[in-house]
Image (cartoon, rainbow, N blue to C red; front, side, top):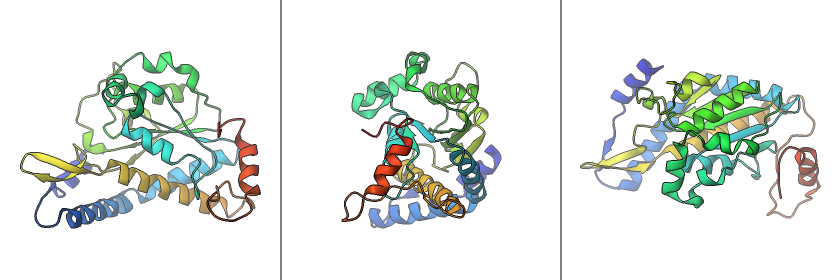
Amino acid sequence: MCEVLIELIDTNSLVKLKGDPMDAYFLEIQKLMQVVREQEYAQIKEAAQLIVKRLQCGGIVQLFGCGHSHLLAQDAFYRAGGLVPVRPIIIEPLTLHAGAMTSSKNEKDPTIIERYKDHFDFHEHDVCIVISTSGRNQAPLDVAFLAKETGVLVMSLQSLAYCEQPTRHQSGQRLEDVVDIVIDTHIPIGDGLLHHHDIQFAPSSTVIGSFILNALFSEIIESMALSDKILPVFKSNNVDADLSHNEAMITSYQHRINFK
């Protein structure tokens, strides 16, 4: 994986700021989306089919991330047009609203996941998606290990551009070494797509992460539509429509997911 990725980075270096920065960012995000579309297409398709089988057996998708990666876990939850059986794993000290520097420090704490073990509830047919751009910090790896111990399917959303960055985990392993499936975001080291002198800016991980998750969930929903009469998808609460569908969906999954 690393050798292929290094070739990509060598030919996809950061753009020096010239002209309109908004145009430059739009262009680079589009390029990065196309890279993901071409290189992760098969992986996303495979992941979707594996998830569909588990959802149809009563499982749910559980998302974990720290700091800005946690924003992606929350973004997929209780979302109009999104999957109903999605549960973000929320550990307050790892979120930005607990304090940005605090969250960053706690992500590297080898005791944090063990201390908050009661926040995890993995069942046999669940899927755990661990979101971590660098794939090297303690908490995401500990969650991946914990999920693997319970026998659920474990996926990662990470950038393999970081694969030569040493792990901070005592096992000596990185996230891609632990999970069952890796979806590579292809985010450059440092996150930003543009630079001015020695300053790298215009981060991309949230945009690309959301793009991948929504592409994955769209594939799941379309696949389920081939056999399921009622799709586990939320309708918008902000349009004038019959919301009995949403109420039924919440009733179906509230034993696993707290929607309150």
